[in-house]
Image (cartoon, rainbow, N blue to C red):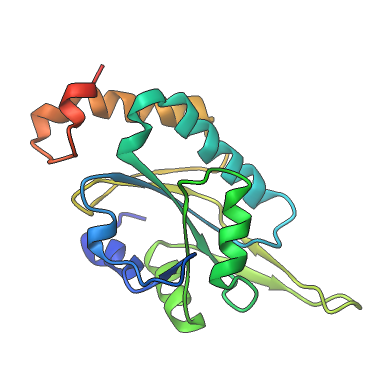
Length: 182
């Protein structure tokens, strides 16, 4: 889906892993690489987070211009503390977000995310089948690009590197990005 500022704005008001509501100011001046998932996911989400970590590593000193962001699909199980523990296994810079079920659903729908709950097993465990795109949001809060789950971290890092090399032409105030561009 093509996202507009109003879609991106749905992120604001979610709660980060320290229990603090996030606002536009938390993202100002940096790109955000956003993934959706949940901490009990056995396969897709750990892979997505590993990819995000790899992207950050491949950016080298430019990583300071990107906030990795993980938004839960499962606020019932993914409290702020649980999310904080989860993302600490990947990249400590990750901003992990949760909220009320209604707020999380609003964000999910705004980004075009799809979820299908899989019925509980005999132990009461349930899983969620879900979409797995990654979204790159520009420092001014406009969506730039969506990446399918299987896009290699090298491609995403390369895309960001190209953006950094041309950032001066856009006039976007991104920290001191022009000085560290390729």
